[in-house]
Image (cartoon, rainbow, N blue to C red):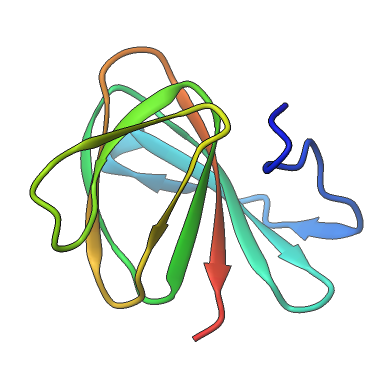
Length: 111
């Protein structure tokens, strides 16, 4: 496991009901921390998806790879295992997986 992404989270609560987007193309579970922080752990299957954000997000790629077009950007950039990208609050981004499954941890930043 890359040094920037933890292998596990201790002393947390997990919401059992999955967050399912795009007919199952993206699936995540919410992890709640005792200090009030929230993360999601998820899988992205092949396809291209557009998400909007309320809070700022940090996306850590745990396994696999994806290409991302960030807000205001015109070009797609590839992110692979161990890499991170940030998405500003109140914006949108596109993410695409060509083959395989990409695993991620999304950390929501306080406003």
